[in-house]
Length: 235
Image (cartoon, rainbow, N blue to C red):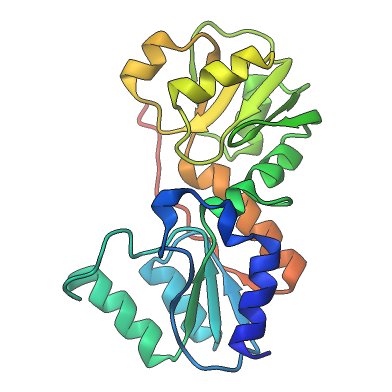
């Protein structure tokens, strides 16, 4: 497949116009490699391990959720230089689907809803809400553990989910207005936790977004490269 045909396919799956404004020029083909693609790898982040595995797999394309180029690049040094050197020397393309994949059908939040067996699902501004029969402990187990509960523990009936860093007071208020009793996201701030009107379950950023990239890779016949951050609960 030619790279242009691949891009067209990905844009049908996660249209760029769904992305947040801050993703302008940070999604799509961010590193250009060889024009013909026969082998694709998927991952959440562009880490040294992911790039090494993709090179070892002789991938022509690496599809990720998070771009390694968050800010305008004025110098290619250090970590970025190392990553770019490995990608460019392998003539590997790098394609990014970020907030456009969050909002897309069968995207990040839909994959999370499936993982947690949500029913009667309704969309939110970003994320979704659905009926949930799981306990907080089972939610944590399905997400790989290491979840934290903010607020007095209650039975989960309607769960709002915003994959990634979504503990925004406006999102939480929206979820409450739609009947949620529990809000699931990552990277809770102390100030938000103190005013949250719902019980909140805090998972890791990786745990909430990797399932979608893994599911997409399986669906498309790509090799998925799992590279979770090292995290250990200190007893």
